[in-house]
Amino acid sequence: MSNNLFDFGMIGLGVMGRNLLLNTADHGFSVIGFDKDPAKTVALEAAATEGTTVKGVPDLAQMVQQLQRPRKLMMLVPAGKPVDDVIESLLPLVEKGDVIIDGGNSHYTDTLRRVKYLRDKEIHFMGVGVSGGEQGARTGPSIMPGGDLEAYAHVKPLLEAIAAKVNGEPCVAYLGKEGAGHYVKMVHNGIEYAIMQLISESYTLLKHAGLNNDQLHETFKAWNEGVLQSFLVEITADIFLQDDDKTSARLLDVISDKAGSKGTGKWTSQDSMELPVAVSVIDSAVAMRTVSGYKEERIQAAALYNEAGAPINVSTDEWIKQVHDALYFGTILSYAQGLAMLFQASKELAMDIPLPDAVSVWRGGCIIRSTLLATFTHAYKNTPGLSNILLDSGVAEIIKSVESNTRAVAAQAALSGIPAAALMSSLAYFDAYRSERMATNLIQAQRDYFGAHTYQRIDIPGTFHTEWNH
Ligand code: 6PG
Image (tube, rainbow, N blue to C red; front, side, top):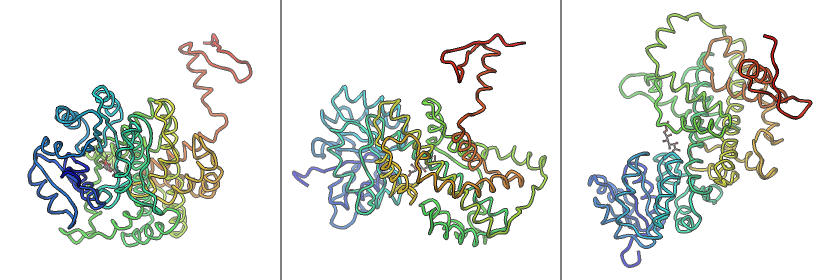
């Protein structure tokens, strides 16, 4: 620490802020954290690794005054108004050239607004996605920064030091202009929603075949040792074994099925429609969390529509293999849709998002890390500027190898009445995407029929309208 000034400051010492700051200190940076709750500043200092420089203060001005210039400070506070409030309270304290980072899950349009607001005051504002939860923050998260390159240069060494490492490479890279960091994080979360939904569908599909929690554990554990290897499959395997400390049941079996959400999945769906780009697997995942909340109505509907569906018509071993392939298929489709969204958004919103770097940043530390990402890196290497990874021949080989089992699972789910919306969406999207000619010519005809909306022809250029034979 030179002149007793700190290298880095953190505003908000909740779980994420505290852990990220301790991680930063472990990498040799002197750090100072602010929280108006003095208990949190005390907890921060108490948790510091011996020999590191970590200070907690309950006064914002005190923190800002003790930072080296240009000041580098991050806030990890709830998205929305709290971020604006922090900015307003910082304004009288910071100076030209200082770098303020919002490391929370802010909506990118808020980030854009804040970047512009602070640019006028010659202060750098960066929207930075941070993924990995509590553990990731402490030992190495995946970090998705966006903003101006000059600001990034100031924080690059620090972010590279604290990020997760894969083969020695840090899981952080400059991901584009202005709101790009938060945009990439939003889409990361959309993919997270989709894969979580697909895993939960796999769980119910396997349960219908009679697998108990121990068998589910074994199945997911084995899957995590193969092509499905990923953080989410890994933690799912663990979840099946967790005992409840209040009853003799497994914890999973006493957890309510109403799913929560903080909104990033919904934002992904909403913003996809603005571009537009289809992210139907993500849409299904958001919708299923919503349906899960209608518990009372589901109880009524369960009584009303209580016919048992057809039994699963293959052996349990065969079913497990089919569900494995269906999950693999759906997972690839989830990434494909999310990455296609980033491709379009990068162009439409002029963010210049380097897709291979986004994929590389997701390889470690984050919730959607998986071995599959290496396949996508390969795809982008083969075809720079690839608009959809489904167009890559390597990805196509994988899809073809699991396609028939995916269809078998979707068909069985339909016959058995097992809800599998994300899986079915992934297949429906795939079948539309691989159709050279869709049935949307009929939609064009209908639009012209009732509203004179005109249509194009396949044989003659131009725009046409017909007086239909009513
Ligand atoms: C991450 C996560 C995290 C997110 C939680 C909860 O990358 O570490 O995406 O940022 O907040 O997963 O999200 P929901 O409450 O919306 O499920």
